[in-house]
Length: 445
Image 1 (cartoon, rainbow, N blue to C red):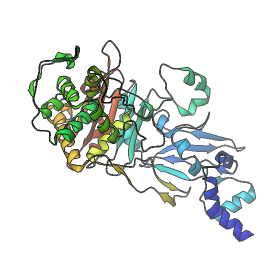
Image 2 (image 1 turned 180 degrees about the vertical axis):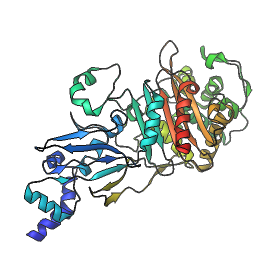
Image 3 (image 1 turned 120 degrees about the horizontal axis):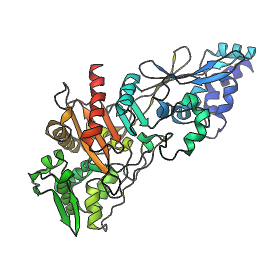
Image 4 (image 1 turned 180 degrees about the horizontal axis):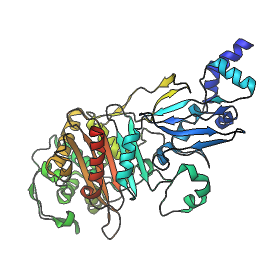
């Protein structure tokens, strides 16, 4: 009997607790103190303080900075507090110590969840976004490790209980919403990556395209203009992409057609399940029967298309990683309270989204955007970068969200960044400077 108890506590109990049919994981808080959550660089992001009399208080030392990604543990659970709930309420302390604690009526200490998050970079991104609404994401494209996930407006999980009613009733700010994974925005000109890919797949080359931009284009009585009615003149596809020329890409979209754009979009996970535990599926509604005005709008990232910063970050990761999307993840490893390894996440391939040639060509287009296009503020910083800006209109007055997606060290990409600033204007105005601060901190801090 004793041998079986030892075996069950040490081996079989974990399978039982973690079973998808077991909906009572939280009952183990009766005998386990909830474990800590750490950043990859050793910072404590969540811990449980135990006071005299046994009172336990969950503490978040960074307050608002990790509020969405780490989450909360009251009024339900969110973020890592939810995703890692089993590990936090499981103890892998030495089994004889566990039995001794149980005999004394004392709780065991839950395991520590060590995340992929970089606390230093998270703070930089949080401060760079400032008091504006929006989202910042940073991922290591070669592994899928998520280093930064910032969403604003935010909240302080330390005071969630007292502010709960106000938070859930504030429809204006939606402070509890993780805008990185759940936000839905028109992609603006970042979608021109998709249109350019469709052009290549249809024509077998990016060469040979020519368009004379006069600042606006009218087809079937529908007019699209470039930003500030800028006249770009004679362009090939490379310069049209670098200049983010709406007219040229509306022209390309009409020639490709809605059915073709839909097919390529779905290859890039639009209308598809994303490889992550909590996300909002992006929507794309074109087909071959779609009217020309909608095709024109959609080809430049407007129309009915909605996407999350997380999704655009994944597309960028695939481009940066030779066409292969790695499985994104937040939990690097689980340790017991003494720091001994329990288990570790190994990077794994999710799927190939595009060919290596396609990734190389899209990367070349994105590098031009930094070298001489709308993200040229990122050039000359001691590292190379590639990216795409976007200005996504969201009302009838022409107000726009500011977008940037891109990566650093173009020969061997290190870091993918996706930024959206709500009502921030053009991508170069608001999103690019945030990305620049994040890239600078990655290399120079």
